[in-house]
Length: 176
Image (cartoon, rainbow, N blue to C red):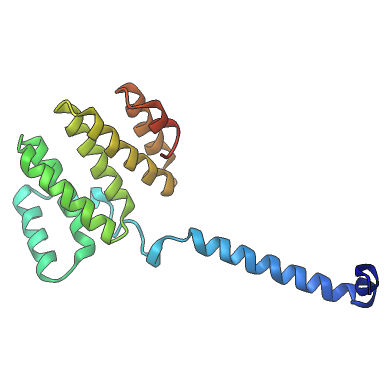
């Protein structure tokens, strides 16, 4: 039996149902592959909410309380804000440790915005210390995170920073 004869015997409506079902399954599979791991929101609270009206001792206390209560989702933002305060007061070494912790905790809690912002600051600090390679690496990671978060303005800002500071062009124009 030829393909033409076989198709003539199969009801056209049945073919349309099968093709439609196949397209629906493929679309669902494609969407699932792009979904963020765990479906957890990127930020449990905005960075401005965390820092508004809090002094350094209050932020340190909030970190201790979050650790004691097992509220790991609060730590990335708190560590990031405290690191910013440390930079303002010239305590760069402490800020570096807090930013690295913020990145680790943000990656675990799937908080891409905090992760990206901490990377930008780490890149700026590395650049200030004359380490362009490390700066470009941090900025590249932040740039990619802002793309994932669909934060186009932040993405463009980091990309401009990379170009302005002489990061390798292929790092700026491609994602490795």
